[in-house]
Image (tube, rainbow, N blue to C red; front, side):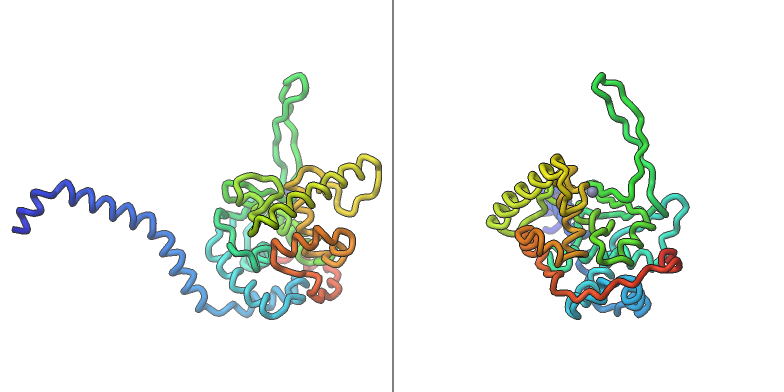
Length: 297
Ligand SMILES: [Zn+2]
């Protein structure tokens, strides 16, 4: 009877089997990731990593205990899920991975999606790296230009960093310059599918406020620069709205009191987006980086 049923319905059963396999293939990676994250939650945060953060990154010391705890959880997950690739002969050691992951996870600490879903690799160069750009001039003649970069963020799931600048960004935590924060702000911006200084914002109200206030501040910055007025932010922020958001993120995390004082509306918007208030973190004066500290490996 069963044999007869199978024979009569073989096509239907094959289709059912293929459908089930297809569903399993779609669901398996998500299940595996969820399971791996659950296992990871049980693993203690390595003492050496904690010591490294305490010693090398003044901002970590300034964070309240609950945020430190959340950051440690996100660092473990980041290191487990993202591939680090050394470039130009650089070997990306575990301490380097921890310092990069820590600064990247600072941005996602309280975000509803508190990771970088599309990110697959972090490529690390020892220092600034050369990028070749072919640009046509007004006559249409293409020129090969070499440009030096400290970092890049790609929509295809890669972030590229100069280690020297990454370490400087971590060590000097109150100068408003942080390469990792900058590049990972671009990653957040890129999550919406376009790169326009408009990261995924939780509410319609925030979207409207963001659109208005950022545009006003960005336009005014460009006018100030044209008129020779000293800008309140690194002039690189005037390159385009995406760079404006990335440079603003550096200021928000590293010079929050300054940003809140000179651009209170922007500070408030960033506070609402990141759901963090860095102004309330008692950042101790960053220790002057020693030559040894700059050569962590
Ligand atoms: Zn940028």
